[in-house]
Length: 208
Image (cartoon, rainbow, N blue to C red):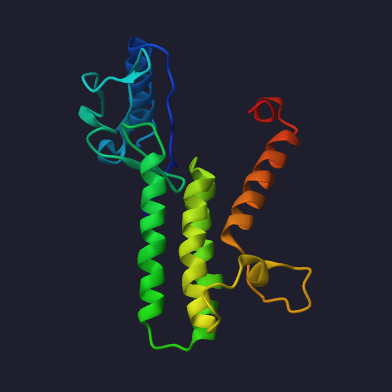
């Protein structure tokens, strides 16, 4: 029979003391060796916090190899980046830059205006909503992104620059355009997340 290889998904260790973390890593390393499995230190990251600040001097090892810290190499887990800053300020600027570059790329393509609107509504906006909901990005950044989107939308529709946002996104007017506002989608996503946590059957999740 061919050799079977077992794979394990991500494992996160959270300890309050450095010694406890080292003992836990040693125990897991012995357990994995007994199971004939192994860790991949190159894909692992460590983060040590002392008195509210990142301690870059503390390092850990597993499988006789040192684990890189998030200060040395940021890590992406479940679609979210973690680095030594422990803040999402940079992610907001990156999302705004992504929106600007994507809108410029759509504008340069040779499609008609209505097809550019389609690319915006069904390709770009869903792509931007994930980082807006995964990170703690303030609403002012989302408003700046929507301002750029509205500028290009008016251009592609061939309407005057002074056309209000209400005319494009209002659902109570006689002429309803099949477009969604990224700011409204952002607010709905945050409200949906809050409702999901509050109505969870798990008491730990509910208190989040």
